[in-house]
Length: 156
Ligand code: 4NP
Image (cartoon, rainbow, N blue to C red; front, side, top):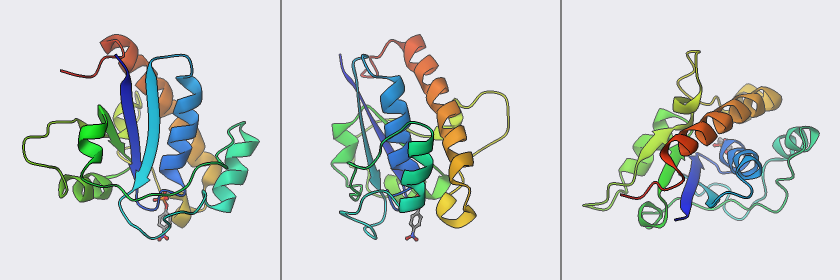
């Protein structure tokens, strides 16, 4: 059964489209779909932020077809696993969770082994577009291991 994974950040122009692109590439050929959204409506309809696009291309990921959209309550029932980039993303999503829905919502760094990152820093503010891609690659490999352990069936 298909595992539908949704990545979520604030603007959906830096971190979550990068996660969608990087993890999507790793998971190509598996029974997995990927999507991304932002908790804000600030950049709806826009492609990823230019410096993010450039840093991604330099690592071999083409994010240019992606467009920002806002996370909505219906996303809870349309995905099997929802992955935020920081605690604010998780809080903003939980406010919209429909009663009775139990779709898992986790932070992407939960899949990073060994060191202490508890969120994916926002390059829109830090300027470190390449560093965030490195962390997203590491978390994506961890997510692959997690899905491999579970099978790709996240439904229950
Ligand atoms: P993202 O980064 O959440 O990783 O897409 C941001 C992009 C834009 C803004 C904030 C964060 N903004 O304030 O416009």
